Each structure stands twice: as structure tokens, then as C-alpha cells.
Length: 406
Image 1 (cartoon, rainbow, N blue to C red):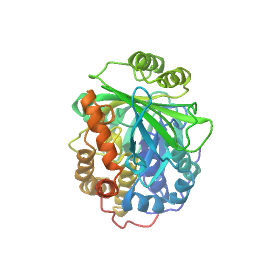
Image 2 (cartoon, one colour):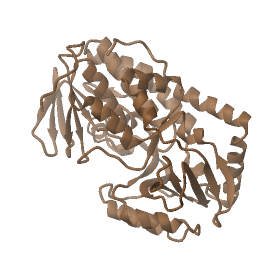
Image 3 (cartoon, rainbow, N blue to C red):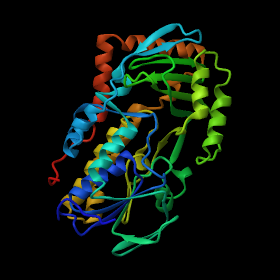
Image 4 (tube, rainbow, N blue to C red):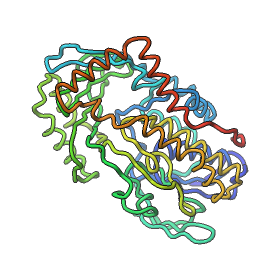
């Protein structure tokens, strides 16, 4: 397709390949295109990813970036309205309520809905290539030659790795994943399911030692729901492309969980068209860029199932695009400024989020009781306000600069 940017702009001579149609990658594509860059997004999946996972935004920085991207009103329009989260025991007796803001932030939206909003804003100005991925790259003085798994080789000025926790770009440039990924002892899964419990903008969550099942309805739909599974485990060797194998692993892991509604979740798992399954893990890299390649989002500072997640990805995309525009495409200067702005602060966000696994699926009965007590305490006005301020400070850790208008 012909790639036509909004205006000549400060980056009109720059071509950028973004690896990954992620929240981070597509947000960056939107901003770069508005600055006049020629942007191509390559995504391994055959189409935009959807799924039952949601992303939440909280605090001043997240809202400011959404507003400057021009999508705040659309995000608000498609928000989930998620409310009460009730913790139950194996007999389905209610034990505690979890405040909505703790997980949802100020506004929550399905990840697929957010990607679709950004896609509609960029599809006429950004080239999207689905069903392909970067296989090899060779950098020289004035560009990068990229070989793809399927498509013909092409040349770009810059390459952005926004391809997730298991980033192929990071592996090609910064070395094997084992050098950067720290497994935190838990795995999480999410998938859509029918609203068999008749929930309305609420969820029920049951934990036994080392395992948790959650069934939710987030948007008030009488038919749509979603399931969340989390379990404690040492690092597993499995094929990330083998969805059937992942479903079998989950079914075996949760088959004997005594909560009566577990069977509903596992039945839905068997029929699920799309499954999210991954370790709860943290990424550490010493730097976010090398030469003409830069990491963005989970590829550079991922912290699965916890932290400020998608909001941090949006803020970092905004900063990276802004620094490139301010430097008129001088990548060395822009990347250095980007790292100075975000690297230490994103690591701070990872520390705040910690490891959510032991809290979401405590390893012992005693820890489950302690967790439930903490949930009840968070229901108090004082502690809820304190925790909300703490999470907002983490979300606002990156001070937004004024960049050229886009």
C-alpha cells in the first residue's frame, strides 16, 4: 500500500519499521506518522490481536498521553465499567471484595478494543504487514537491511522492537532471552467465555494454594464473560505457538480445583478461539537502544500481570516519538534522550508492582487468609485512598515534556 503521512513534519525523511502491533508499537506508529515519518508495522499474528485481557490507565500522565494521541474520548466510550470483584472460597462463600480501581485504574478497556481504536486512526497513514516477523537484520552507516520470515527484504532507517516480553528484536540485537527475562514463579492465562454466572460488571475469584480462577463480566453484556487462571510453577518448557498444548496444560493443572465454577471455565477454555498464556516475568536490559534499534514496551521493561503496563507503554511511545521529532530524526541523540527520560522510571514502576503472583494466588491457606484480610482492609476509605495515591505516583513517574506538536 502507499504510505502517506499526515504532513511533511520533522520526520518526513525517516522510515521506521515497528516490530509488533502491540499497544506500544501502534501508539508509536500513530505519533511518528503525525510527525511525517514513513512507518511500517509488522506483526506475527494474522490480524490485530483481541482476547479477553483488559488494560487500565490511571493518573495524570496516562490521561495526558491519551488526550494528545486524540483517543481519550474513544477510550472512555469503550471502557468496561468493571466494578465489584468478590473473593470466594471453594464452597463459593464470599470472603472479601476487591476495590475496582486496584486492577482497573481510572478507566479500563479491552486490549483488542484499544488496538482497534488506534488502528482506525492509523490505517490510512501507516503500512501494516500481518502474518510476518523480522528474521535477520544488518545495520550499516545510514540504515538497516531487514530480512523477514515471509516477505521480501526491505531497508529502513530505524527498527523499533515493540514485540513483547519474548521480543525477537531484543534477541537479535541484545542476545538470548535468558540474559534478560526473570521468571517470577507463576503463569497466567486469559480467554473469553460465556457469561454463565449471570454477572454484571463484576467477577468472582477463588484461590486454593498456588492456584486462582477468576470469572468476570466487565462490560455488562448478558452473554460475554472472561476467565483468568493463574498458578504457581517453576519455569516450564513449552511451545508458545502450540495453543492446543497450552490448553491441555491448563486443563490438567486446574482439573481438581474444588470450586464448582472451575468446570465452566475449563469448558470454555476448550472452545476458546484465542488464548493468552505466559509466565509472570520481568525484563531487565542495561540499555534500551543499540545503533539504529530501540526497544519499547514489554520488550524493554516488561512486568507481566502487574505494574502500570499499557499506560507505561503509551507514555514511553509518546516520549520516543517526541524525542525523535525534537532531534529531527537524529536517532543517536533521540535514543539517548529517550533512555534518560524513561529507563530508570520504568524500572521504578517494576519495583512498585513487585511480583503479583503470591498475592493473586497465595501459596498456602494461611497466606490466602492474609490476602483476603488485606482485600477487606483495602475496602476502607483510608487505605483505598492511600493505595490509589501510591499507584498513581507510579503511573506518573515519567514527567511529560512538551514536544513538537503532532
